[in-house]
Picture 1 (cartoon, helix red, strand yellow):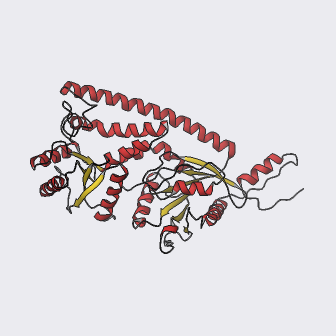
Picture 2 (cartoon, rainbow, N blue to C red):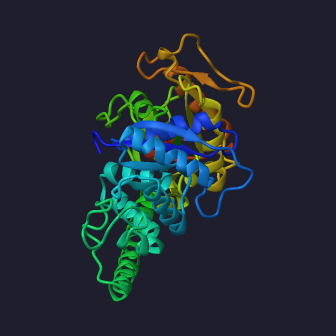
Picture 3 (tube, rainbow, N blue to C red):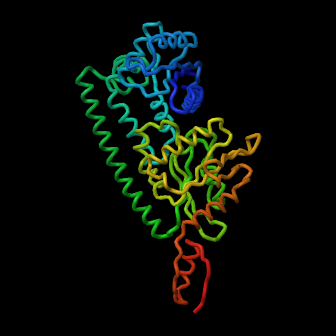
Amino acid sequence: RGADAAAALATPAGAWTVHDSLAELGRLCETARVRVADSTYQRLELANGQYLVGKGKIEDVAARVIATNSDAVVFDDELTLAQQRSILAELEAHGCRGDVQVLDRTQLVLQIFSERAQTREARAQIALARAEYMLPRLTTFLTTGAGMESRSGGKGAGGGAYLRGAGESQLEMDKRLFNKRISRLKAELADLEDKRGINRNRRRNDDRLPLVCLVGYTNAGKTSLLNALSEAAEPLYADDRLFATLDPATRRVQLPSGRACRLTDTVGFIQRLPTKLVASFRATLEEVADACLLVHVVDASSPLACNQMAAVRGIVDELGCAETPQLTVYNKQDVVDEVWVDASEDPGALALSCVTREGVDALMRGIDDTLASLDEPVRCLLPFERGDLVAEIHATGAVAAVDHV
């Protein structure tokens, strides 16, 4: 951490080029306060079952670790317990220090999330994901597998310091404790999910406002956009870094037609988001499933914008929201040389900058028009004395005509 150095290793996957994946892995390392000293990759037809990459590549990585005096090797794929142990043993066989840690992408993301979580629910979600990740790897963390030594704390100290064991009986005890912790966290999250559902239903019944969700890749500017669209409310924390906010926030927004809506910010997505995190955050992401409209926020300044959009769409589909209407906005136009909008898949896509507020009014009109297109025409006959119902109709819908009889 801090001054620690790491060698990053990637294997090509999907539409992302290997250089794209390495660049993102580097940003994740920086977010976790790990300095990247070197990086490399290997193209393979199939992943090596023992080392993920070829044995010759592990020898090359060992040489890079020694040359850069690195403290860790970070893989851009999830490693099995056996792979972590085999890689560590091979690195030591080629002269690497015994305290070099072998990490994978999932460990890195879990660490970042654990540092960013603020609310009780977010902390419980991260704790559950980490416990489920570590449970099948306890033999590794208790011995030497991922560079962690249980008895002396010498080899890759950082896990062994709090997972000390005295052999197989200690391992069995640790597994029982982890299973109990997982059960307790699941019960806590189920309780929080029930309370969230009750509050969500209460809000739905009380204000009956349509829900609009902001979705997008991490660091696309969703929280900044929510602040720009809800100027009257207290600004939420926003920063130019990955996963700056993990907890959803909702604001009431007045639209140009006079109607209002609830606008919700959601956790940022990332390509190959660990499945344990998707499962843990499913209760939080239920807001997306309840939405009438999804506003897909894209970082127009990123050279990987198209790939990031595809990753977000994949997660939205996984959440069962493929049919929910979407409006795409290309944010951060203030830092690009030319205004860039890809209207090939969404003719209504908008260019926008939260900093200069250019395009914010157009987005408000776009949300207003899209919600209006989802309205069902209703003809009502109201008593003159029920002005409260008239006000509610104006707040939650669009009034086409009024007649007095």
